[in-house]
Structures are given as C-alpha cells and as structure tokens.
Image (tube, rainbow, N blue to C red):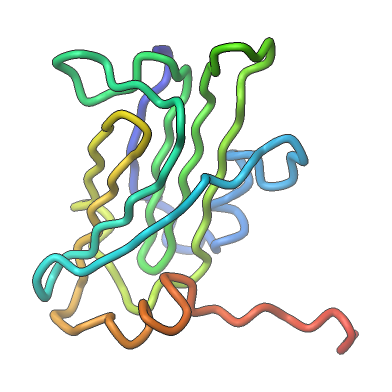
Length: 153
C-alpha cells in the first residue's frame, strides 16, 4: 500500500469544506460505504464502523491488503474518510468517501485512531467533553449540521 494516514488538520482556520477537498469531494465515481454505524464506548469515546465489503486486512498489520490509499482526517468537530480499493472482478479501483461536516460535539482530533478489519474500518473518536451523544446518534446519526434548502436561494 502506498498511502496510509490518519491526521489532524493543523490549520485551525480550515473549514469542513476544505477538509474534504482532497478526498474526492466532487468525484462522481466516489461511492458511499455500504453502511456506517456508530456507538459510544464509555463517556469519552465514540466508535464509527465503516462497512466496505471486499476490504481485506493485511495479516499482522493494521492496514488493508487491497487498498492503495486510506485516509482518515479529523478536525475539532468533523470527520472525513476516503479509501481507494481494488475489488476482485472490477478493472477500475473503487473510491469510497464518507464525511461528517459537524459532529454532535468537539473531539480531540489528535487522539483519533482507526483499526482495519476485513470488510470494515473502525474509527475511534475521543470526545473533548464527557457527555452522551446518544440523543444525536439515535435521531440523526453523527451528522448534526442541517443541510441547506436549495429553494431558499
């Protein structure tokens, strides 16, 4: 694999739009994961499970064996994930993208971790403040930013 990274964006003035720019924001070939599930792990952690059928974990390592690029980016209150993966039976590599513009509350981006498993990537976010996200997770999921109504223009 040529590029495996997890990083906190150092530029605190960077907004969620620019956080997403380099991971296929406008690429119509980038697909959404088959599923995304999240749950709390105590008062200070949230697990985000991104389901990607066909993803294979490299034996003995925390990286995929059939992906060229895996990027997890976090910022104070946002999360972006991208993956470029080879899929058996398909000529072109598959691009996957998942982005949360505004999480229910702030996180400590530098403590974000991920674990690669067969068919999924599990990201652990560390909350800045110990409080339950259950109300948000049960009603709308991780994304708390309301989408703008295009008819209001």
